[in-house]
Length: 122
Image (tube, rainbow, N blue to C red):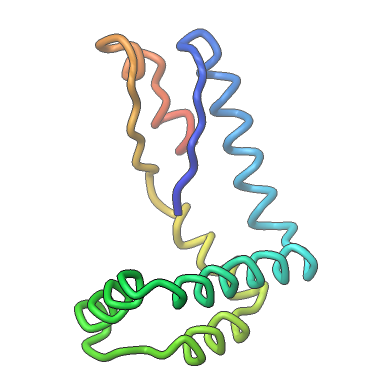
């Protein structure tokens, strides 16, 4: 799972508080409507990817490398449909169980001095 946010060094503490709150809320308050929207978006991406020959070749190659077999679009759509809110909460809890990984761009030492990782992990 990834998240992108941009700010200045001065606003880093505010950003970390906002990120933590957003992530915690996302784990606790997933609605059926949000879940269905997310599923529809994923399924649309799967179906639309099938309209390009290069994308199909990449899809097949990726599946062979990752799964050691080709998964059809229908199979993937079925897997997406089978995901429940409890599954999402369990996966989210797993993602946020450890210390976060952070990539930052800024003046040398500015992010380390702001203790961003420690603030997000607290």
